[in-house]
Length: 176
Image (tube, rainbow, N blue to C red):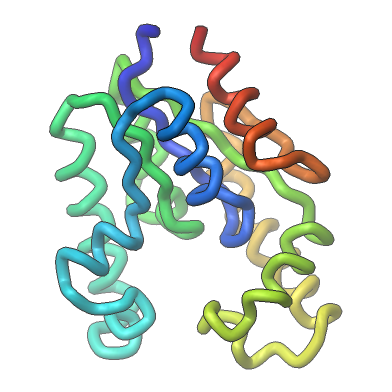
């Protein structure tokens, strides 16, 4: 396998972390979730970093962490935060690595909204939304803004109505 780094991107709730963990088991490669890595580095939840330091501080640290991890040049599966591809020149930066492949886990608004409604308590961006219709509107607006970045990925994997293992296997099949 020529690829030594796999980067998963997509909207929150698209399954990046779950797919990354599945790929980790299948490929025996290190897996890291960028948000979790940042939380460990600062010993603070991402939500608290946003609240205490602001989004601009977080985005700068997110980019620093991304560069730090990818400069290792070791086999790695990395799950990005939903907004990571949309700041700075991140997608262009990722394309500068010969042995790195990016995968957009493309998930429909309906599927995302249903998943996020169930996890609303753990998603501060959604806490103010009252019902599924408001979540759909919020997700739809965000996807419209973020899709130009997500669609720059090397591969698009549609995740609707597929198990985590099926999505991971599709990614693995593109690498061989």
